[in-house]
Image (cartoon, rainbow, N blue to C red):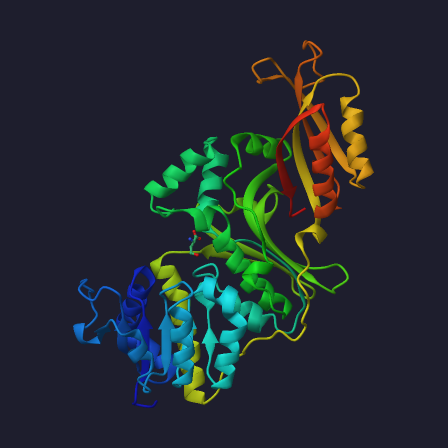
Length: 446
Ligand code: HSE
């Protein structure tokens, strides 16, 4: 056991940073035993130095993060401030001054991961970021290390707890989106501005990171197709239930069937109630990985929160400290496959389309022809009549309704490309008899 402590600089002392500092203090003896040397908090960079921070000595607090990472005696910089700048500059400076980095910054990794990995490699340092995706759930290192000998074909995950909480509430209580969002806000799951979560930006950043690691290629945030979940309605959940499904906001990363490209996307999707992801409730995250030799694996747990995220940060800190003592580094970026990221149009899946149509002879045939013209094969069709107020009047065969009203037509397709489906929907919208396209939802996990 060496006596000189490994020195850690903490950038950010909010919800996650304060938990990192607390665990470093309360578990100091265990960390020392596991690492083989004491690990010491050498400085904490914050924006508001006057705030009381229990358990952290006032002398450690600084507002000058740049000076802290430039000190030269820092072994590991832990970055939990988030965002692109100043985090990017501070991490780069940390490498230049001999420190390794543990980061929880998904936006930065998704956007600048390649450059940061290159900087780490140039300076012979580590860059670890388990906490950037799915909080406490071990996922980055299982993909980077445990599955390094396998071939991952698909990653399908619920990687945003806020949206899972909202969708779960809508499913279990019949609430609309706004009501469920209000509850998520009141309980502290959703932020005052929930855009990053509900519009899928947070999940898209995580999808980019997961896809790059899983397929040993580079996937940036801009490569990820993204749709939020604000348009999901109680009617969509009712339709999903009729199909034996629920609705989740999924991050889906896939290797193409010919192995020559990959795709990464985030959008709401129906998944069968029998799929393991369907039972992920409240704000939990879960990621389903399909690998050639391993088969199907599921990683489940809390995807956010101070202590769970700090757990992932501390795990990385221990690993990086061990590497430092061994004079080694862990795995760096693995992007050797250089697989291109295909556009969304090339994604192949099934679709659930809900149309408002005129209820008169020939409409069903017209609609079916549009699907056929675009090479999209229909699996099932269900028609539901409406009375004049637009409320469902009949489910079975339209009995008792007057012809000439409006009907709701639900079409579920076989697998088709997103481009073919988009062309189909555009053509459907041009039909006089189609009054509106109420919803389009992909069906996954079958
Ligand atoms: N806001 C995220 C979530 C946690 O709701 O899962 C941080 O990525």
